[in-house]
Image 1 (cartoon, rainbow, N blue to C red):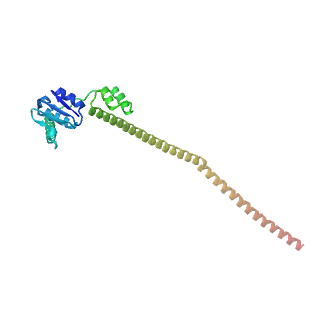
Image 2 (image 1 turned 45 degrees about the horizontal axis):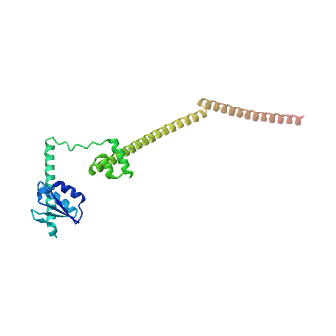
Length: 248
């Protein structure tokens, strides 16, 4: 723990790099650390974040004698209020610019696509730290991680598009296969009907067979009638012959 005597804002910036809890930042007056109230509030908040004390000799401020931290609490509240006011003014300005058709948004930071891909791949593989990746790309943390998120979203979008394309191809192939199968079934049924029809006798043959069958039946009936008549004739002649023999 030690006391750091600050004479200007440049010294303060250097001191904040090495400031530790328990240290004390001492200035001759508020003007040594800030050009206006906004700068003073921001500097006081940074000193408080490091757990250090603040002494301004001209204004009689000494947070070492402020066990309740009233000065730093007041600085934090006023700094937050000031930032909220700035943000509100910025949003109002954007809305007015949009209404006037003048707002185009912040110009995106240009980054070489191939360089970003290679550095992002090294970082995701654990070969370099995020800090080193940001340094190589000359990007701030917010921009770096936003670009990483956009990169992953773009990859996922590409994967989803590929999946949809594959599903469409599979569906088309299934539809084509089903149609080909239905066509094949129709062809097989048609061929089966043709074979069955070819195996059936023609109508003319049915008629001829029927006439032949009728002719054969008539011939058999006539033969049977002739046989019966012949039998009767033989029996009659036999009977007549026996009668003649008997009379003689």
